[in-house]
Image (cartoon, rainbow, N blue to C red; front, top):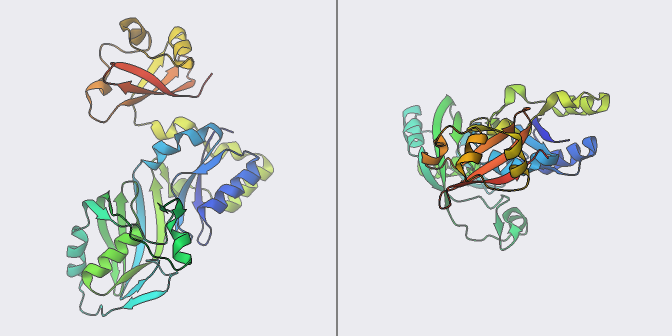
Length: 308
């Protein structure tokens, strides 16, 4: 079973429990998810199986879209509605215009400090384990990118925002920081991940649907191919000779091998900053794997090979 499932995680379930469920249903032991969702959160949880686990790193790097319902006037130790109240503030003087103004300061590249109740590790231990033991440690802030932040609804003291962000963004931290900047505190009441890379909540399957699919044997209809998450990368088509070279881990460096692999002159990715990977297919359509460009050697090196 090599592929990806787009699962709609329900409220109250951990991401780990969803992975355990997929292992039980499928019998496949190589199962992993791409980006933890809090138990409070619902929505898109891509789960990779078999060879699909090898592309989790690329899926984690993709853009995410969240819809968050946030309450002003109450801050908690977990930064969401499940935690202990640490602050109660007066929100009565905050207007929609003031809120929208505050939101603009969180667009672009910002610094975020991970919450204590998170899976970020400190000296080898997840922070949430330390938090549950009553231990609080200093956490280093780290940059993350908010591409778009829009106020969708405002019914004081509750407001709803839609966030388009990069990897490593904590919506709970965003809500907490926003509450502190407004001087009244805030926490996340509800959180839905609407999109993760190419996977949208409109196409996500529920757990009952997933169970039925495995029980009655039509699970493959919900499987996405491994290369689904790489669809925005450039493509080359390899000849039989080049296919063998890629399978054996040989780099593509000579002009002949480059032409055989489907290049015309210079691959467009070579001159594009940051675009140093491409996907490669055999002439029969089989997804061979991922090539990575080495600028020093001017070679495309097989990084991950899938089709033998």
